[in-house]
Length: 129
Image 1 (cartoon, rainbow, N blue to C red):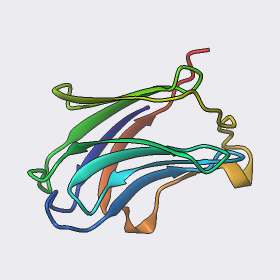
Image 2 (cartoon, helix red, strand yellow):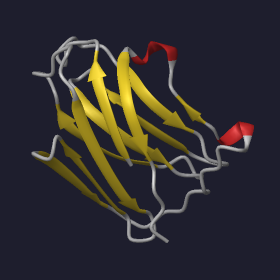
Image 3 (tube, rainbow, N blue to C red):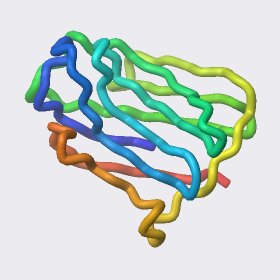
């Protein structure tokens, strides 16, 4: 997943700001800023288990463009996130399973929450199967 965004909030504002939600047949994909000042990527599998990682963005300010690149492999239990090609974080856990994303299915659509408070320029999602 690659997303180009410009926040309309301060990274240290102690508020949560959802940027992107995708609800596969079971589970959830969430990307946004957590109240603690981290840019958070969270996958919730069909059993309700969370697999998440975050990068501190307390210095992030409105008006600056950023690119987040996120990779995950559920069968290997791995995720990684890069922000602006500089900062990165990795997650390693047990393998898990999620249903495929299908934007043709109304219950499995990409959602940009009204409270996102960002300007999005580009969103790319690839499957490397």
